[in-house]
Amino acid sequence: MSINTSFIIPHKGREDMLIETLTSIAGLTTPKEQYEVVLVSQNKEISNTLSAFIEKVNLRVLYNEENKYISFSVGGAITSKSTPEKEYEECLLKAKAMKYVLTNSD
Image 1 (cartoon, rainbow, N blue to C red):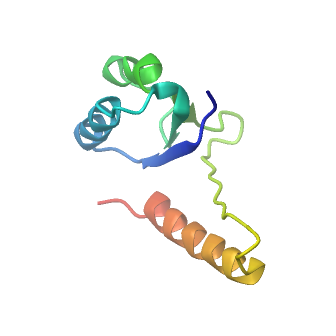
Image 2 (tube, rainbow, N blue to C red; image 1 turned 30 degrees about the vertical axis):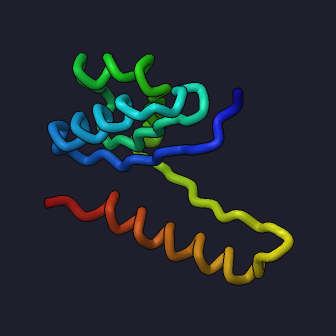
């Protein structure tokens, strides 16, 4: 099986909400080999509670230790029926939303 879905979750605190989200993902009937969960974190360390999800949901944590920053990527699906310019615009919109989430806290 190959991964066909990626959950990308920005994490800037509120661990209880994150754990609720990861618990929901862990409860999916889809085999975990078909998806990945990427946690984009501002935190160098993750708690033991979050560590428990590494195997349960194919969890990866992104944090740039050297530069002390987080990064993210966005993408689109260019198919025979799509318009590449529209896909690019969608990527820019996704990036704008992700940047907003990562730079604004409660």
